[in-house]
Image (cartoon, rainbow, N blue to C red; front, side, top):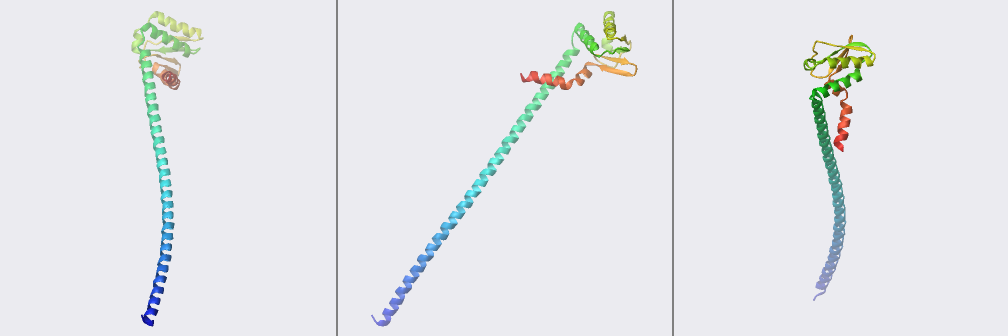
Length: 197
């Protein structure tokens, strides 16, 4: 081998060694860069998964809360409907009482509402037709006990049950419907307590 070939071989070997060293260094840099990028990507993926999990949990919580609200709302509506049914039945039962019990109820309501004044009591057609002298006497006695007097009107009032008290320009509506409406909230409370037992 000539001297020139030796020099070329030596240069070639050196170049190969330097190229191998450069490739080794480049591979190390690439491996280090890839490891760094994998770690960064893994961190981003973990953050994304954590955020997605939090959003999913928040969504689930809102969905559960919404479902609970709808359930409670539907239960409340059902209870309110049942209370209204109970009140309607109570009203129907009251207006359908046998005559003796019905007029006993009338006298009780009168006792609670009569004023110590001179006045008039008005009934609807149905009750006016069932009026007895004994009942008229009971009405007058109740008024007297309260320091007043009542005359039973012979003209029917446009009502289906109960009565209307008139004291001059003042009228007191004592129909069962008016009494139910005036005490509706209190009656709802009573019905609600009964339904919750």
